[in-house]
Image (cartoon, rainbow, N blue to C red; front, side, top):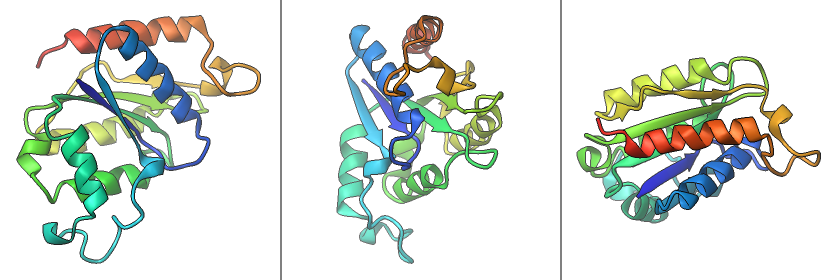
Length: 182
């Protein structure tokens, strides 16, 4: 099983289209997937006592238990926000770290895909987040995949990734990630 984290809570974000494409490719490859869409996070995860495990959001705990604790490989697909990743992604990471820390992160593998309207495909953000993942004991898959100028790979109404070169490249990346063992 692989869990995919759609790393933004922005409504109608282009990142969601990349998440959908990756989900479809992994499913075609026979992989059981879970998708965590940060746009659907419970609203009660940010509060002054969020670092007290006894006050963890029950809905967040359920997400952690069903999609993270027993899953060895994760993929984070993150847009570029201010030269890094969205704050909601780090908030989510911090919020799940208070419960079952080692069981959640240690020894697991993380693949990173960056999405940007500009030229760098969120490379800087991927590097930032790789450091966070390494800190909590995860192995970061060495082939970080930036997608630059993401809008140019979409259909005319901006509802799907249609560029066959990008789809083929992501398909090969997914196959390699599936086969990777740290």
